[in-house]
Length: 211
Ligand SMILES: Cc1cc2nc3c(=O)[nH]c(=O)nc-3n(C[C@H](O)[C@H](O)[C@H](O)COP(=O)(O)O)c2cc1C
Image (cartoon, rainbow, N blue to C red; front, top):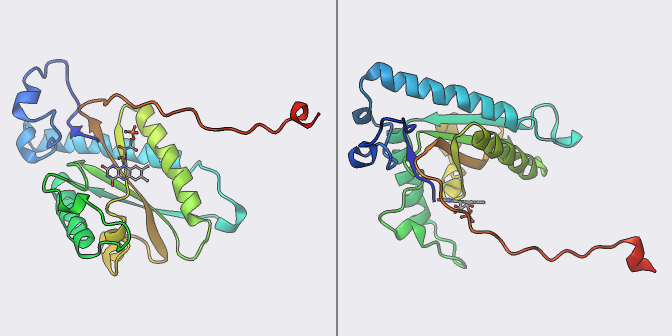
């Protein structure tokens, strides 16, 4: 789970109490003034530009062409929360028959986690390599975000809504591209301990096995 907040400062002892570290950070109430808010957003915008640059260094095959991706960045906690509510409603109304989702019915579940920035990595419609291309770019983006001290979270929940009729266009996705990867960015308010995975089963085929 990701929780989003304004960047902690050394002097933010009361931050948890007033909400700044809980994830509802960049609402206007948490900034000293409009200038402070704009500074926060422009820092984040700059960081988002740089992680997108890292994303597009991902390798793609020739069939994907010169421009395999179109990126769409959506800013604003309030705007994303409103989109999240629509994505949740869409999921409730379009439950898959074989694998019903439980998250749309959880009142506390926030699709975009109060993050201030959403990056959509969109692949060219009809390109069978598009989902691979976008996933490689997404992984680069998350690694670059981590290196910059940003928190990120890969989101599958909003994809059915994002790919429903008219939504990508409404959000500004370029015509001819479909949203494939959705990743939120922000300054993380906490660093959850990871759960180590079991070692994978690997079958080594080598020359000693041949003899
Ligand atoms: C393909 C994919 C889709 C995910 N979708 C969501 C999502 O919609 N909402 C969410 O809160 N987390 C989502 N996650 C994040 C996971 O829930 C989890 O927090 C993350 O993969 C970290 O895993 P870990 O807890 O094993 O380290 C997604 C992760 C992946 C890889």
